[in-house]
Amino acid sequence: MKILYSKKRRKYDLFQGLFWILIGILSVIFSEKNNLLFYLYTPMGFIYLYLYIKVKYYLSIENNIIKQNYIFGKKMKFSEIKSIKHFAGEYILRTDTKKMRIDIGSIEKSSLVDLKGELKKLDAQWV
Image (cartoon, rainbow, N blue to C red):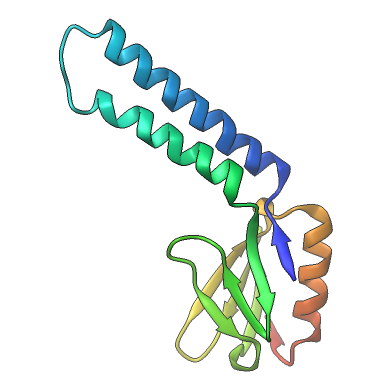
């Protein structure tokens, strides 16, 4: 099962990418100084555009493993999850050694219902 990013979050990535590309191009064209930092704005914008185009899933749940879908995302086995806490717009999943935060605001509404259903099935303590 794939848990989608919200449309708001995806639009944010699109507009931020376009903003950084525009700032990078304008700073190179209109700047009198030749600063290395000006050349980093445009690649940063392309990274955000890449995120908008390619990265659509916030979480994936497969084979009883929940995995965050970004570069340094964490993964946990459902059988290891001891407690689930709903606090400040986040689900905090804990095992004996790990902790995973899931931002509810970044999840599409229909996918949030699926995620809640999967978390309710777990034999974990709700705090």
